[in-house]
Length: 210
Figure 1 (cartoon, rainbow, N blue to C red):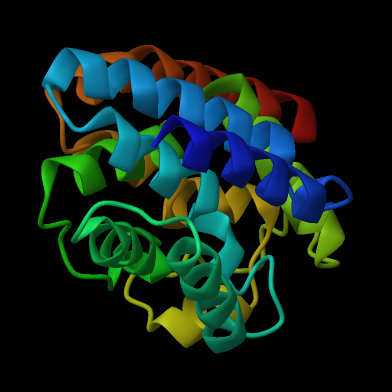
Figure 2: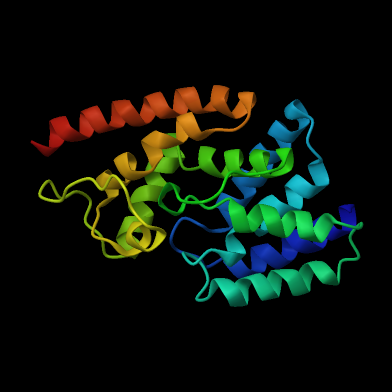
């Protein structure tokens, strides 16, 4: 599995080096590191966790033109790695289940999936999460903030991805919900400080907005 991880690391990095929405190689690197740390603490299969963390954004429609094409490419990549029986199916299950999608996705069914999902969500919190939120909003032509737009409560995946919003609205539509959605005890612990930092940021933001 070590050889598969080395090859996959190079393959993913080559594809995401010029990504400009906050789902770049550095995001993958951070998520993979945190996922490996949490896997060690929670007792998850580190090899499955690492491969799923490396590959998780290559089927995301925020990154690729087509989820179906992305999934086909990832399946093709995994098939030639000669992984242990069941590993490919496990990894695919994780990366097809973990996206937030307005809160409409099904729960993660394995500990490895929970670990990767938690690591990805942790990277959406705290100082890094704030920076990524404004980077993504700018890449999609969304405003920093629009007080005239209401925060969306219940959304379909389509509405979540393409409806009218702003960077600040994203805090209420997703980011501030993530602390309570963490799966593992270690991720819940890590989320506390990052969540508090975002609340402090919003308080300062509104003071300066006027």
